[in-house]
Length: 86
Image (tube, rainbow, N blue to C red; front, side, top):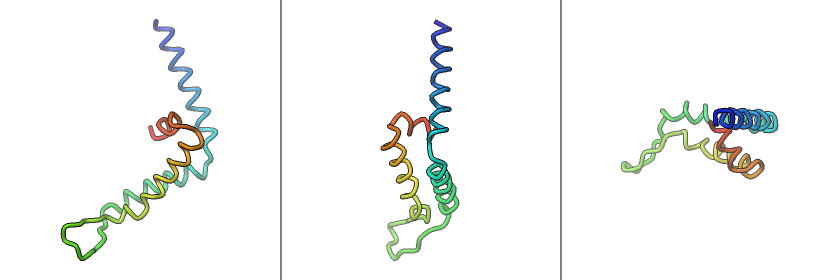
């Protein structure tokens, strides 16, 4: 039983390493850049005349995060996208 778990963990790690090598560096860079920008801009607010609606500036670059993850999911599958975000 223990050897089975050890073998499964080793196989998952090998698949993760292959995934990291196969993801294009531009896609990974855009994902990291969009996450950092979204967090930096989250403390700035967009001034709109509606007092019941509050928007932060992070929403202006959030589309980039979703686009890169959609590309990753479309090309490599949902398992790879989940592993990539961890």
